[in-house]
Length: 197
Image (cartoon, rainbow, N blue to C red; front, side, top):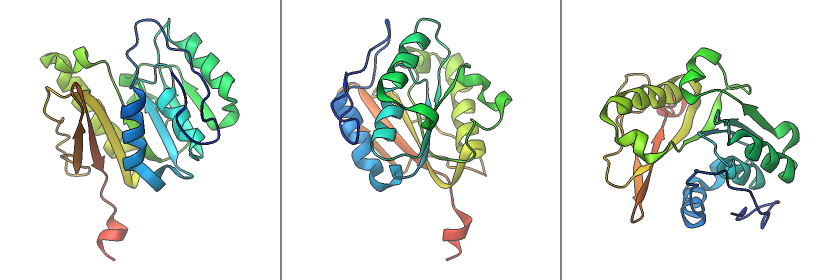
């Protein structure tokens, strides 16, 4: 796995055992859609795994990125990837389960401009767990995103995009793109300032 573009273009990353990372083509599509939103952004890579998404964001000009990961076998690889790229103080590792985000408060850097959540597909397909995930995604969208910020969810193409139904945040995605097996759903937090302009 490699960094696709930016200052660390071509840098090879380790992939933790048992992890299905977002493929290069899908990451390219993700960042093509995000475009200039990544520049100088505060970024959140939730279910970070190898850290490829957050490191790609930093490589492309994001100001800061919090990597949320708690897998015992994954963390050493993620730390090595952060060190390999020289993420330094721009990369903040939050070693907690994603479901603990609401207990930890801010992810370490204030309001988030772009958040990407890419949990393992089988977990989202479990009906009981799906409700917990939708609560988590809703919390990220309402509690962590800056006004006008973007939340991106990666999920199986077999699933409908999660609904985040809450009055203070986005309810449905403004865009969903699919490949054969996976989908990316994009949600935007309303910005009262731009709505009144």
